[in-house]
Amino acid sequence: MARRMWLMLLVVGLFLAAIGTYKYLQISAAIKQGSSYQPPPDAVTTVIARLDDWPSSLNAIGSVAAVHGVMVSADLSGIVHSIEFESGASVTAGQILVRLDTTTEQALLAQAQAQSDLAKLNLDRGRQLVAKGLIAQAEYDRLDAEARTSEAAVATVRATIARKTVRAPFAGMLGIRQINLGQHLNEGDPIVPLQSLDPLYVNFTLPQQDAADVRAGAVVHIAADTTVARNVSGKVTAVNSVIDESTRNVSVQATIPNPGLRLKPGMFVDVTVELGTHEHVIGLPASAINYAPYGNSVYVVETMKGPKGQSYKGVSQRFVKTGRGRGDQVAILSGLKPGEEIVTSGVFKLRPGAAVVVNNKIQPSNETNPRPEDS
Image 1 (cartoon, rainbow, N blue to C red):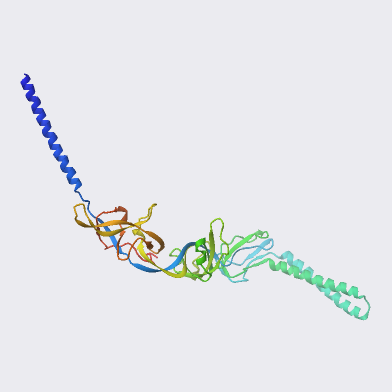
Image 2 (cartoon, one colour):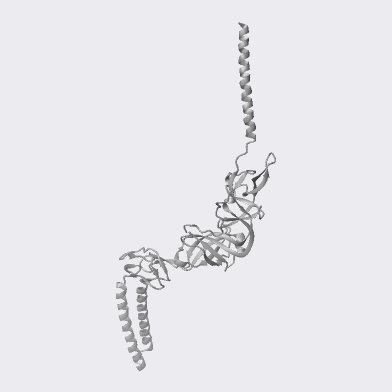
């Protein structure tokens, strides 16, 4: 009985040993295969780095403002008698916009005119009498003062009537009417906004370290929504003489034309100020830059050596110093050499030493002055 038990234990032991040996060999083979596994190369697009001559410039965000812009308001109180403009219409300087009721003033004018006429008659009689010595010179002086006072009263009433006719102070485009016929207006009540739209001001700020580089007369380029305005150029007309203490920025004002009156006061625009100098940089598509808190980098395609000494096309990470943007491109100030092959798309999936295959059939946009297809 004991012999049969020992025989059974020996058979079970041999079976377990065989199973363990098999699994050990299987796992060892998998480990060996995994250690020699090479992931497939990543498909990327590339561009050859080359030096470009970029004009030196400064970029900022600006706000459009009218050279002349006011809210036309009532000079005196009164009832709106007639409205002689349409919302959104263009007007000339001095054009009548609104007439207020002047019934009372017209009556006062007639009264003042009658008193003025009487005073002139009395003055003419007094002139004849003083010449004959029938009245004293003092009496004549009183009549002369009364005549001039009456004339001033007439002029005052006429000025009041004129002030109740609201006119456009300058040529421009009206906004939306804010009054109605028969409405009583108090002094200073708004009537309609009026803006002079050509030319326009563009106000923007620059850091204090750039203030010395900007001068009146410098060329500026304005870019807004492509459906609104593109390639509008003007000139810097004023640079503030003080630096804002809270922001350490200097305010700059440029004057630009407004063809087609497409730009409106209050719009924000991208401003580029030309400094009149040039710099040599390497321009790369923005998609080539791997932005990170610890530094910006790009991937350079090079011939690399594998663990067994084999050669393959791989990438190495190169930290670079970036400058300003220009269209689709970003200026690389340092970290690259002309002639190096730089990855322009697929950067997010790469790591240093990764194998790549270059396919440049479809390239990312790389224009300094891009034109969207739908613009």
